[in-house]
Length: 498
Image (tube, rainbow, N blue to C red; front, top):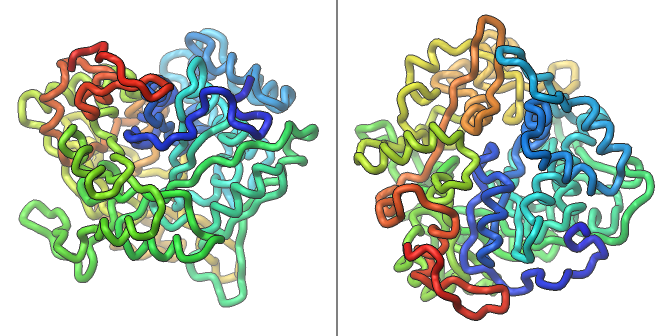
């Protein structure tokens, strides 16, 4: 049975508020295996919802080792849609070494039907597998920046019974209404920001469940929405109106992995070229607590003392990413994960907050590791291209049509599309780099394989408090200071002794 397919919470579903949220880390670092392992401890396991269409297609083209994807596809409520995806991408035994993966449709304001079906199915598969075999809570994390995929992605996750939707990299003002509509299988749409759009021009993207599936299942359970924000002001803005109010917040500081907000005021860089954050960037936790919604603290929270301090401040708990990114169940390619752990153990792994690396314009954390795209020489040797395009920005062409551009694409193409040449300096292709980090990087002519790109949080010293090769359960045990919980809420002895 699909989790929550009747619209009611199934026995064992988590009505209580989790103390630990395992951060959603893309692309595929927060895989279904990691989320499943965390949810089995009774805490919130979160899958990354970014680029799941390409991950599903490439897993099938690798032959679907273990048959996990095919098992999930068999549970999809529209068998013909699932069959179409399987037949298009499954390669028995896997594609031969050196052969490129079959591409997936790129997103746009007028999505191709197959592309939309693939996004729905991919999100269903990831959440289904994350929730398989236990009654713990499962969430999915999206970037508001990637608006073109959001309606289809959210619907796929809801079909699998997702408990929480988390969204950052922008304000999810239209997501509450989208969740309400999709829970009833009504058409859902959101506004898409188009650079240069004229007054009165409106651009949207949406999904019509009845058109996509045909026969509809029963009413879906509406997941809880957690908005990931970097200030009390943003939390207050969302909470002031019931149409934009989420069900809670994750308050993320600048040292958390992945993207972070830019410092308030004039951008100042330190001697290492990192943005300088000051008192104005501190989050007023008391002000958020006064809003009356549950919240979690994120960024530098990996330790039992930090969990205790968060609870004392009024928070429901903490969100932790980096510790889970480096655990056994992480989606990071195993050899690469071991190199990262060795760097931590040797005190020589540096995580740099780069203000130029991300095409989004937000600072982005890069783990400085030889052989990855964080290495200037490695990235300089990479052919500059944008063929996955999740971070493309829609823009208005002179004729009124909508085009798409990305600072990480070839410089002349970006400038030809009206982009500023200074945006391209230092900009890296995060899409291909992050996909390569989990072992499904694109392969091209000339025996070329995309180099990986790793993002972690800047607080990594706590990792020495964990076993040499630790599990997700070890991380939860450390955070709760040995207080593991059963689904009934009663403490049980630690199985790891971490």
